[in-house]
Length: 287
Image: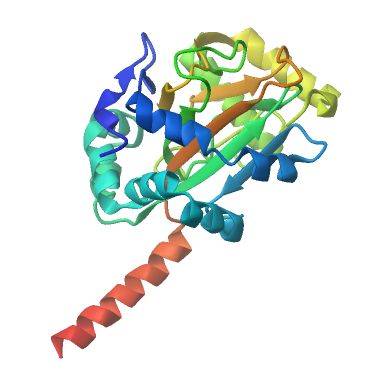
């Protein structure tokens, strides 16, 4: 197995954050780094600060790259396989149970899940604003593609914790109320919220600044996982899995390169369609 989830260990005092050092053997990681699709991503980026190429929204480009790059094709096939899903669920069963409840986690054995992958490239000036990820996500893995063992300063992923859990949930309710959505019970009691939706410093509005100021008064930056080559961060989606990325001190020729694996629940309407198809197949086979 190329990506071994047992290499991830819980970050100190962080219930949902795990990190891994030397995720891949050096030779394998060197091949992944050397073949990273930087040219394709720079073309997509243009004059912006960020670009991504993912298996969902950029299917044609993603598939074309994967098919012509054996090492990435092998990794993509592995993490998309049901055996990887099973390994992920088994490794983090306790944490997922704590967040979503025993009944919900047991149902993951029958409810369809999916893995989506994406290549990310960003440069100085990029800002991924504070957010918790969507409620459908369960686990995210971010693999850092940089010279092995060396750090790209200031490019790590930052995680935040509420000083008081009840006040933190009230803050989330306030963000949901702004959208006319005050429920904290979907799906399985986990929702996704964001402080604004900002991707560069220039886009910050007064309202976003107000939300950030309130956020900072209630939360602390509990951990930054440094952006070191051949390291990775894994985190489990919860109602308080707050994180962001701020690139403010990179040189003009420096880029933050990563490969992101998202393990999520399939949307309910898609699950229903799949379920109906399976029932029809079983009925036909039983004739």
